[in-house]
Length: 254
Ligand code: 13P
Image 1 (cartoon, rainbow, N blue to C red):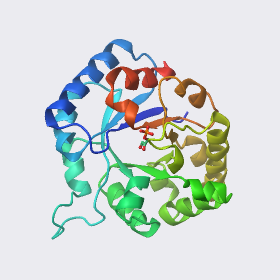
Image 2 (image 1 turned 90 degrees about the vertical axis):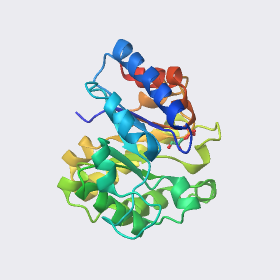
Image 3 (image 1 turned 45 degrees about the vertical axis):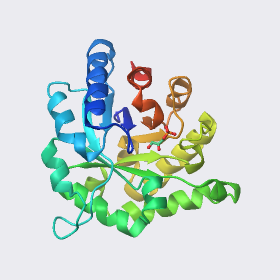
Image 4 (image 1 turned 180 degrees about the vertical axis):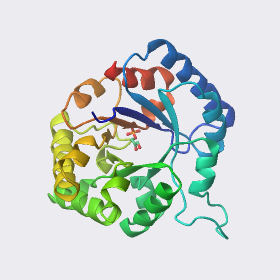
């Protein structure tokens, strides 16, 4: 059975103290309210990682993640953060290839393939984001875009390495717009992703892969989205900044 995951992406929000306060609320609620087997992951800015990982000790339903990592192991890359550094904080996951990184920081599939290697080599799990823009969907290129992002970003991995990867489908037109993909639209792409993974890595690996949906997910629409057979949870932006909303999404799997 593949893992159900609800991951919060705080993006560039929350100063140090605000982040700790939010996370403490989340932990208290998880302790009292989460009864299922799902995993909650909080992907914070780098400055919070170590403190959150310390607070999360003993909570097996919560893991911590970063939102980016550099492709090199170490060196003269002023302002960057390595996968080894992230691992040393106690974090377990790293979001890679978020559309905001692709759009504003010029990250392409080739670079993301390298980042994936470095993240895996350091014992971290990538949450690898893929998804089409509005233009691409309107031109009916969304399947091609997804296929290329998967192939160029991930298909150099062995099946064993791929087993560590979580996929997040985030249609760019649904991010921060309040415009969610319908559950049918999301399920269609998730099923396509799983079929592609089956062709590349075989049925067992594809069946075990957690595929998250992201893009204006909230406590109201999450139950219908997560009821789809190929949607294994969510990558949550705005709603992850409110402890009540985030927990209500995590609890869809209770
Ligand atoms: P929103 O949930 O704010 O639309 O953001 C989605 C997202 O980008 C998560 O990575």
